[in-house]
Structure formats: C-alpha cells, structure tokens
Length: 248
Image 1 (cartoon, one colour):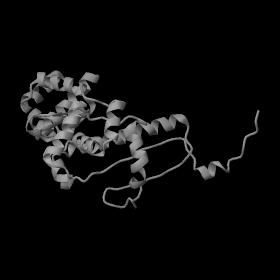
Image 2 (image 1 turned 135 degrees about the vertical axis):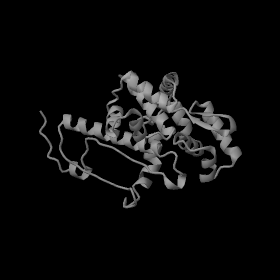
Image 3 (image 1 turned 180 degrees about the vertical axis):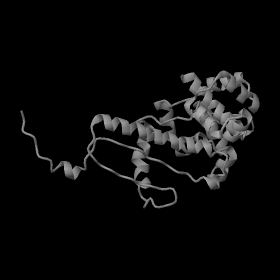
Image 4 (image 1 turned 90 degrees about the vertical axis):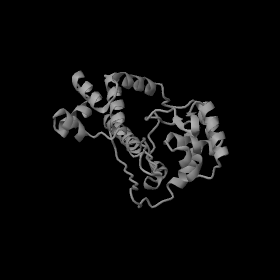
C-alpha cells in the first residue's frame, strides 16, 4: 500500500506539471470528474486505468517508479550537525529555507541582499552539506522531502524559540489569511491523541498548499508561517493556586 500511495502521489505531481486536470482525465476515460477524484483520493486504481492515464499524459511507468525511488531518497530531517551549521549562520539558514521553499536562484537574488557570487558561495556550502544540489546554470535542486521537518528541540527549533518566538507573536493576527486561536480544556488521553493527529494533518495541508502554488509569482504568495502546538499545560499563576495534595 505504501508503494501504491507513493506512485499515486508522484503521478498527481506529474499530471499537475503537465496542466492535466481531473476534468481532462474524466473526458479521456469517459468517467465523471467525481469518479476520478474518488480514484485519486482512495488511491484505488486498476492497472488498466493507470496505463490509460499514463498513456494520455505521455508518462512512462518506469519514469514513475524512478521518481518514487528518487523521492524516497530525499531527506525527511537534517542531522543535528547540519542544523547546527545553519543555525550558526543566518545567511546560510536563509538560503537553505529559500531553497527548501523552491525559490530559484534569480528569485533569491531578487528578494534578498545577496550578490550572485555570494549566493553561489552559500549554495555551494549547502551542496556540500547535501541539503541542495547546485546544478548547471545555478539551478537549485532541494534534497529534502515534501514532508520535511526540523528536528524536535534541534538547533533550528531552539533558534526559533530564542530569537523568533517573540517576533512571531508581535501581531494582531488580523491580516488577510491570518489567524490566532487559543483554547484550553480538559481532555482524556484518547481524545488528545486524536486531536493531535488532526493538527498534524493540518500542517500537512499547509505544506500541500505551498507546493500546489509554486508556479505563482513571488508577489502573489507572501511568506506565511504556521505554528501548531498542543501540550498538557496550565498558566503558572493558576498552578500556584492549586491545592497542595497531602503527602502519603
């Protein structure tokens, strides 16, 4: 099932790159668009259907398999040593984040105060760290997976806690597309686990939306950040008022 899921995800990406929609596939396969959506959502394909779709899109099945293999070799996380090197050099970290977000060489130069020579030097360091591959004509190939995450309590997260946390919350969160929601309640462990799983899916939807809009120009997709957290916690001032349990 994991291999099937990977094949379908790669197929969806290839269809999108060719501007082939579910409606296009529905007309080709003489099915309703809703049926095509269900096939992709359930990842339930007969081989004959998969062959038809690949033939229509001009995709070789062997190319799909190679793309899955390449995808599986991508980094889900960096090592502590890799993260530490980024956290110790803000410029290097900025270029790494930009590359992970699929900005091109030209877009990075356009957006930030780097000379071309300086940017090439930083990308060469990231290439040496195996975070990106610097290709001919300054093309940047990120070597991280779509579901890439920073290490929990790693150097990058600690950098955020130390330097970015206060800045992140210095906002009314009332701009277009912005939101700040805080809730507190009492939940049993099973309900907490279910809710945590939904929050992780929300983060994945955020990543999916980022990748689905990569073709838009930079001025149409400003940098947005999402912070999702849930823990057993009570305000310190409230904890101090708790009745002390007798010692046994």
